Each structure stands twice: as C-alpha cells, then as structure tokens.
Length: 118
Image (cartoon, rainbow, N blue to C red):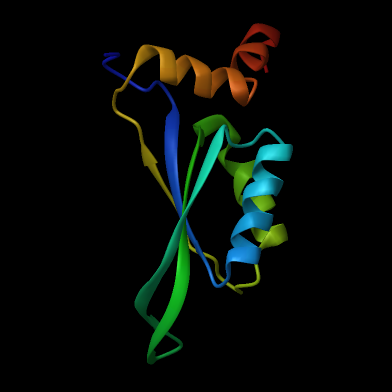
C-alpha cells in the first residue's frame, strides 16, 4: 500500500436522474478529468434549500481524479448538470494500492502533465 495518494481525490456528486448522471460521467471521462465515475442507484436526500427543508430522489456519483484537475472537473460537472448548485465534494485519498493510484494518474494524463511541467 502506498502511504499517500499524492494529490488524488475521490469526488462525490448527486444527480436528479440516471440520464443526467450518465451525461456527467461521460463528460468527465471524455475530457479525461476523471479516471472512473461510478453511479449508484437512487437514494433519498434531505437538505435545506432557500430556507425550506427539501427531499429529493438522487443518484450518487463517485469519481476519481486529481487535485490539479479539480477546477476543470467542476466546470465539466456544471456544464452537464441541471442543478443551480450541484453537490461537488472532494475528499483526499490518503493511501491505497500503488497500482490503482498509478492507473488513476495515468488515465487523467497526470504523468504526461508532470513530465511537461504544467
């Protein structure tokens, strides 16, 4: 196990429909701003919105990316998302499989970006 994810992130999002969730996932993957996006079946969210307690059925998306790509990641999600304020929450990966983390970085082109010095 690698002790640190060195800039790797897990990003949590919700979408109102499976269609929207798939559009967000495709946008992230096509742009290479995520290495993987998992979509989980409908759940129920309870939250405050504009002073009112709301309830909604939503799909949970779990994506893997890097801290360097997070600003572009957020732009892509907002482009494909219907919510005025979509949930986009990133969590640092503190450790994991060396092979998996190398794959994640490779799929989003992190190695090529580091080699070019960008």
